[in-house]
Image 1 (cartoon, rainbow, N blue to C red):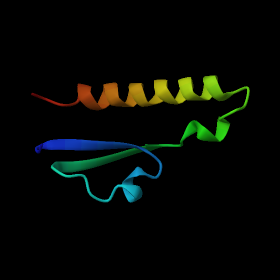
Image 2: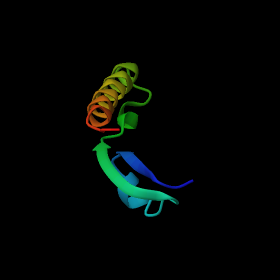
Image 3: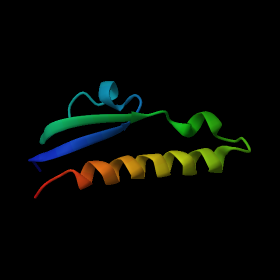
Image 4: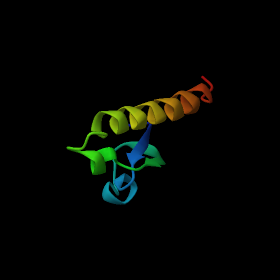
Length: 67
């Protein structure tokens, strides 16, 4: 596929994914990976927190796109 923007959300994605076939635009909006909290009492809370943060940012980004 072509003619799309790739939104990279993890802290290592921009460097770790140097080529995305068909992407006309790369938008790094990086977030720290909550995996540091795996197998801890805070795991569910931190994953939920990061998910809400990413969803909020994506909502804003898509609200700014004019058709």
